[in-house]
Image (tube, rainbow, N blue to C red; front, side, top):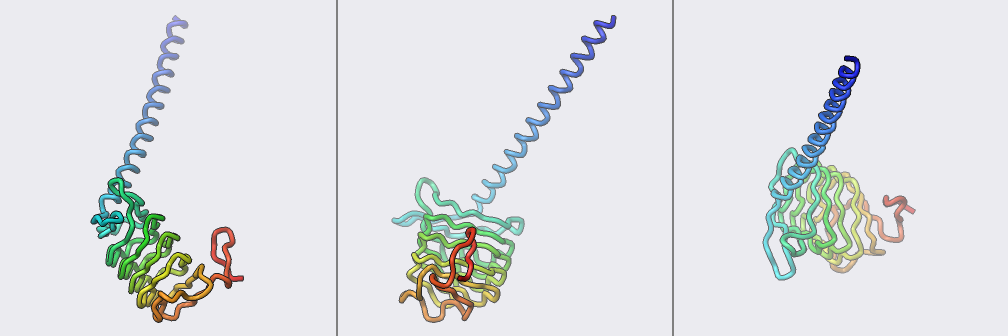
Length: 202
């Protein structure tokens, strides 16, 4: 009888352990599916149009629940080469946007009035920043403009009242419009350096 009870107890423990493992696997699978679903949901908010060079990100369909966005470098096997005018305009919930190295142009008003935007990169593939591109990005405190940028339009950083601009170029390139930064503080390449990835004044 004791042997039978022992065997029954042993099978019970094994069964419970197996259920526990199955439950964990289901949870992990659910988390993975939720993450993939969330990523797909964000990607579905982008619309594009095709040019000879690649795709232009035409529009991001704003969703107030989305705070962080990573722009894809490829779409349907071709590079994403530009961010169109007004693509992210008035997306007030976004706090961080990552631009890939495939992008060469940020068109006018592209990020206009992204009032909660705190972090955005300009990769060294970008050569053009259009007029009013970052107008009224009032929460943006710091941005680095790489030396690859040869053209900046009128008031590109207008009314960015908290912004400090770090330029990798040693001086202002000829192709930058006279009034491109609304008198925000600008530091050129010989006035600052990277310290642990953060721009720091010399």
